[in-house]
Image (cartoon, rainbow, N blue to C red):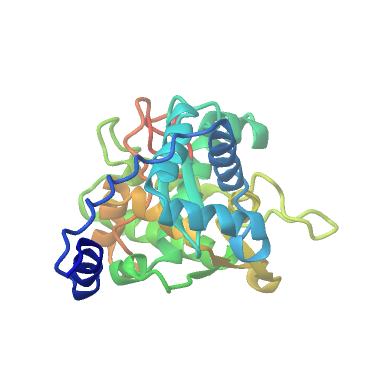
Amino acid sequence: MSEYHAAHTDAWSGTADPAPAAEPSAPAPVTPADAADAARLVSFGLQPKLLPARDAEYAELLRRYREEPAFARLADAVATGLGLIVMEVSTRAGMAVTAGEDSVFAVRMGDYARRASSDSADRFLHGLAHLAVAAMAFPRPEDLADNGYIGRITVNGVDAFVRQACHRLEERAEEHGDITDPATDAPGLEAGWRIYARRSATGATKDARRLAGSTTGIIGKAVAFLTDSGFLQRTGDDAGGAYRTTARYQLQVRDMAGSAAMAELLELGVVPVSDGTATLLPPPDADRPELAADQGLPFHA
């Protein structure tokens, strides 16, 4: 057999030595275009009302985040550099981010309350309104854990809930013989229930508009802010305004789970509320109730 014939016979019979395996290719380097796309994805995340299902570019960047680890790390780094915390990246919530305490995007409870009123007591009431909305939106722990759960609240319903809690706190104070204002080391709700109970529920003007300083006016401002922030969606005008929760709000409340004030509400037995929301801690001055640091969902002190 000729050498030519033998060589070709070996090749066809599979007995020839296999070719050496190709070296694994190195990951593609990150380009300026990748960095721009990562920043673009974070910018989409800062637009809470924008849904991936309604924006093809947003949806494509989310796909890259889920399928390209290097791109995901780059987007996370961009968010971190801006002082943002990535809570979730999914088709239901988009790139859901929240601002860290030192971020330029952080919303301060003091600034929020001062825009509404110069009354120092109102700062406590605005924080209490946000606490109550979160508690009513997710009334059971399993609701907070269920990604498919949609909470529904109304302005009047939240006000009724807080007033019922105030009534229960009043009863508890009478049982303990506490007929005066509580001490400065009293629990946050105990220190503030009288302020809420004494405030008019509506204080409507002659043209039937709610007064901004009424409790329903304060709750109305809270839900309007949450709606503008992409946390709630307005569904109707019933009971002072009806709203439903969004995936972003569930993530926000879940992230702030385990609060002292929520534990107080659970002890009152007013409604079977969840264990996830922001908290109101005891104010440093009982006559000037304030939110403690990092305790004003979704605000920073």
